[in-house]
Figure: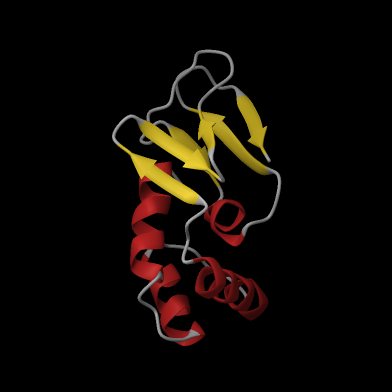
Length: 108
């Protein structure tokens, strides 16, 4: 999922009042998750408000660290991929892939 998509998922997930509504939202985004994954994500988002992911026009940050390809320096949120769960659940490290040069990298 692109970082842009993850940011949109986060924006909508923060308004989910319970795990059932979060499951429904994840289904809308094409993500099939088990109950434990949804529970972990829901709990973490309620605790943190999703503040680990900062989304700006010039790129994104995860826990204050700029997300950019270490090889080609691409920071375009539409061209960086990751697992929504790794980015939004607080699990470290989070893995990313660059659509520009194919480099895979981690943050955290």
